[in-house]
Length: 70
Image (cartoon, rainbow, N blue to C red; front, side, top):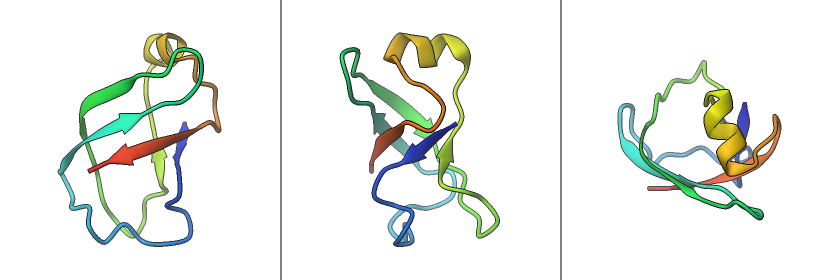
């Protein structure tokens, strides 16, 4: 689970359910996940869920912050 940076204090009013976005990671193995589908609901946390292989490729660990690019 990865936190979406800068979003925990303000709602993402410009993001719509099922919108396709990019997600940028930081660090030595920074990369951009392209064509990420967003699920929006008042019941959802601002988290990104990816599999272990994707996390390892980007050098991500649980709790790391990533940037959402609309």
